[in-house]
Length: 316
Ligand SMILES: O=C(O)CCC(=O)C(=O)O
Ligand SMILES: [Fe+2]
Image 1 (cartoon, rainbow, N blue to C red):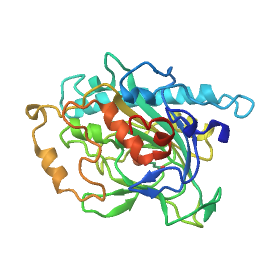
Image 2: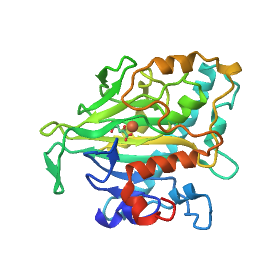
Image 3: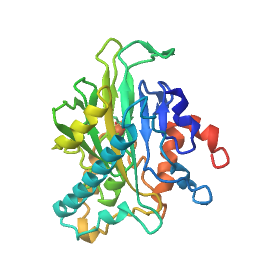
């Protein structure tokens, strides 16, 4: 796996070993294989976030049969589901058709997305990395739009309620967890809440796996389980020992602005202010007129400083 290391390419797709990721400044105890949209790199673009684009590092068929084809099929299915959910959310919030979906593409870019297959080890030390504490991944809100998370049976995923209390998110066979990200929270004026969540990974506990692709939906309701057996089964079949997380995101060049108060009112924003969270409010919200790519870049710089030090010191 080391010859497919994420740190070896500027776009950070590939394998990230244990201990290479930080959340809230602390080491996460997990390893993962990261995927981006399968597109060419754009070395001549002056827009820095375009450095996140570039082909994936798939294993050859001899090492893992159909790795490329299966991953791309799952990626496309998850992307389609995120678009369907986005349209459903427009209807639920009584917004004009396209009011949310328009951020998922722009004239310069297709919608951005990342996906990863994650493993949380049970042992006290892995790959020579000494375990410090029980952080599988520290408390955070996903930065993008909608996250689709196919979990395995081991415990560990927790969500923080608005009261500040942490509760377990149970695994349900054949279901995926849908999570709203901070861009959706911002654009919806808090009508959709980006859930604060984390994974506890205890030494001596059960090893735990997930696959995710990102984009996100609603606070505590955040974590509504959607029956999506085909996609979830495909993920668990292909990555039997990992969780799969898919993150749908706005297009890198699109500017995500709150929708007008006349469409959504202000009660969401007020409710958001009253919620307790271990993660600062508006943690990865964009500044006025800032393209989403700049926000994504801040997230990468914070979580994967090794990649920035290796490839992007000119803009660090
Ligand atoms: O593995 C999980 O259950 C959650 C992963 C997660 O929250 C993340 O990578 O953002
Ligand atoms: Fe997350």
